[in-house]
Length: 220
Ligand SMILES: Cc1cc2nc3c(=O)[nH]c(=O)nc-3n(C[C@H](O)[C@H](O)[C@H](O)COP(=O)(O)O)c2cc1C
Image (tube, rainbow, N blue to C red; front, side, top):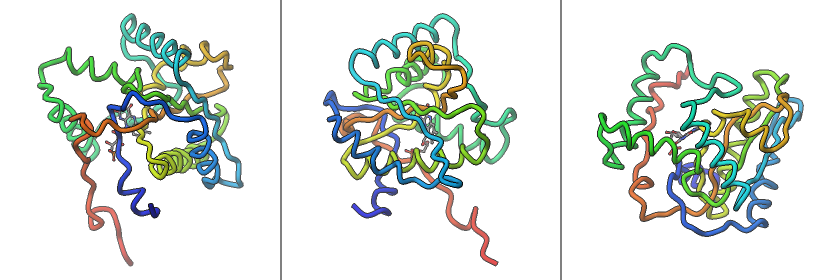
């Protein structure tokens, strides 16, 4: 698979086969991803690989926290405080596409909640990756991290795996840090659900649209 093929084939997968991922395959993905570029080669990433019982324990803790206290608060602001055009329309379309594919109606808050909670189970993936960064690093390191995350997803694609990046699992950073015994200085950025795609699952059947070049490229 060449690079363009991998980029075009990658999509967010939200249903996985009940099939474990070999440790050697996870290592192979991370071995490749560590060659992602970073400003002055700072390599700000720190990855936790969770699977089996420890993964399920942490997921239960996140779900319990969500059930008891509702949505948590991540260590950093991912999204704008005030949503505005054109981002709000894209965001709405993204949610609508997911719900339409699953046949979830706008007023069916219970099923929407269920679908949201599926995030905390990493959509049934056998592996959950968690991505941390030292809190005192600056905006450049967030850029570096984005390149690393995409490298992880592309390397996974090349290895026949599927992924879903998940900002949602960063909603309960204290729960995650307490579970791992991590200091507050370790900022939780996001997760990636990792496994083999369930190609029969309707939720995996759609592709999200993208803006044409004319809308965001200027040649001078
Ligand atoms: C950093 C990041 C965090 C994301 N968090 C979530 C998430 O918590 N739950 C989810 O279902 N999708 C999440 N997504 C997936 C986006 O919705 C998805 O990338 C976007 O709609 C484009 O679709 P595609 O990935 O299939 O190309 C996230 C994507 C990124 C890049």
